[in-house]
Image (cartoon, rainbow, N blue to C red):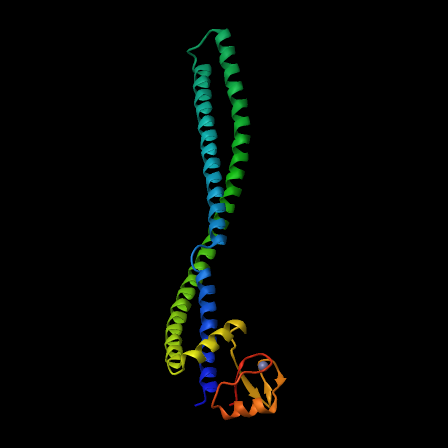
Length: 233
Ligand SMILES: [Zn+2]
């Protein structure tokens, strides 16, 4: 096998390693925390907190109304119970009852407003809970798939790296050095195929002598235009 061909095979493996490493780093970047999920959870927590506040103030309103109702009932019992005879006292009791009833009506209106707010808030929280659950579910599924991809890419890379080592082991140090230097200079492509007398790396027609030397495959021949190592299949 010519050295050009050996280097070309090594390059195929190295290019695959490059692609797999890039894919792996993309996968690793997507593993872990999700900003969308964090935001959704935070927003839900805020709404849930507001709901708790509203429910507490609803209970407070209801308790106050209950107190007033108990007071009004007590005053009414006194008023109609027959134990109080003094007209002045009776008039005062009457006034108390009327006042309490007016206050209770006002409070009832307020309670109704809060109840409506509680209702709206409950719907909002329940909707957001559903949304967060959905985002969580999607995120978990994505993470599971990413972990699997990570494992698969890791295994594929290990195999490819071993294959690359084996191929490189058959080459001499100076050829390998040239190959590595050209790979760095030419976006990972140090070896170019020759097709129809043209270097496929730079698409330039090769001089006849260069072409012949490359065809013989006894030495490493570089393209005089792009410097890539030529390989004639
Ligand atoms: Zn070239």
